[in-house]
Image 1: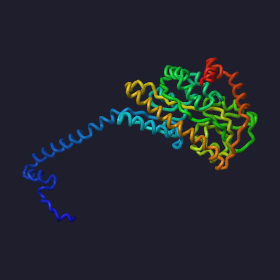
Image 2: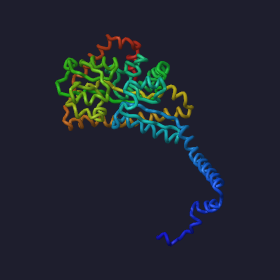
Image 3: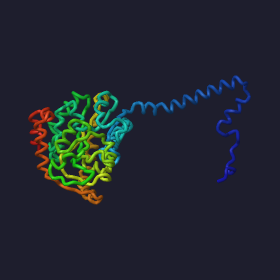
Length: 362
């Protein structure tokens, strides 16, 4: 429809009727009216922006730091965590997710949380064992049998007692433990691996803690500390000969592109503990804490369901990608690893009955 179909008198255009009388006033009066109008418009803008600004200020900021790459389930689970909170308490939380170690490097999260510089992370047993040595039992090879055993342990009295110790010693509140996967060896060049002796001289990347490095040595390799974000390039260039991770992580981080063999040692049923800083936890009321706990459990359930499903499918996938998949003498690895821990300072740091209680949990 053409503009001329409904001609509009100039005097009725927005602002024109208001401006006409002003033209007859002297300059001082016009300036006063203009200033008053500007103040009125400014007040209106503040009124309109006020509730939104107040709402944003009232939202509880929860920063998440993780070394997980975007395609991994324990990266995606944080989106589930955020969605759960938004559903339970719309507009109450601002969950800011930082992946791939972009906020804090792997291993730096606990100290950042204790200082109040970080609210949420998924921490490894090695992270927690630095201050709570009992947690080191979960860094030991062949401690947990399978994912179901892991959940029974952490959802029962053993997990509850360890969580309390972490809160008391580290100013961190554990919320739930997720299944990271069963760790396997991933080799740059294929070799015949039957027993730990076959790994002698192999440069095996492990996370940079004494617990992880001890495990690498117990497996028979030469353990080398390296941040997760550096592993792909190190495998590609030959700086390291192998790395160990659950199969879903191998695919998510694309390690299969720079390796040729997976050895199914199944040496560690690995997990991560979703935890919140004590400072952030204490700032929440009871309802807020309940929402955060529920969101953590939703994230864990999402991760576990998808990780188990993917893990079951990945051996075939890696074979299709040209990798050799071999199974060694797992009993030989189990005996060697347990013997190494039995005579070590790390093993002696755990309560004598803890490993037995874990083994007896059904």
